[in-house]
Length: 190
Image 1 (tube, rainbow, N blue to C red):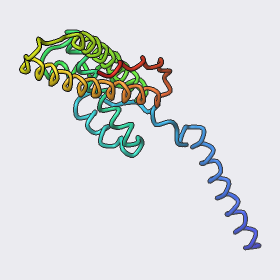
Image 2 (cartoon, helix red, strand yellow):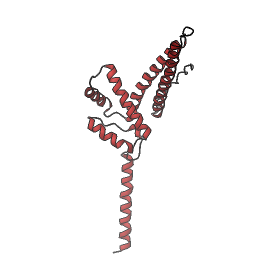
Image 3 (cartoon, helix red, strand yellow):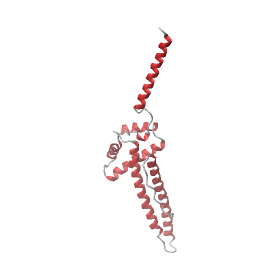
Image 4 (cartoon, rainbow, N blue to C red):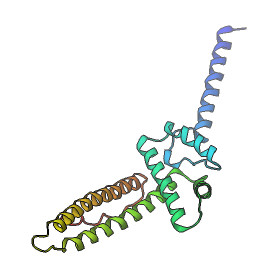
């Protein structure tokens, strides 16, 4: 009996088992993948809460913020479409819509709807500003002139907020790999 050979054979077997385990792990998908391809678990509110609590291990803070915005936009879309009414029914419809979908899909759907809504709001604000810019007051009517000045200032603030929302949605969609059409040219400043 030759003890050094038995010990070497044991090490070889152990190394072989380790190599086989690593190969099996690689074949089974144990290697890190794209976190946006992860499936959302949302069979019920508790399942979503548990999935969301674990998500920071896989998703960046920006991806989590985009996910939360996408979920909120999906809720808005369900309510606006009249697909459900009441908070519990809207939440159930939202969970059904996102359960077992990839994070990428949820982001693209929710942020896509956010982009559509934000661009429509921005366009409406810009058109209103253009119309209001044509308004004139009678000479000496300082009250009306002050009102129009205040209105224009509020509209500029609202237009900037809408433009920022459009840009956030565009950036979030681009981060998912979704092609985003070019942004419309900005409205002329008033």
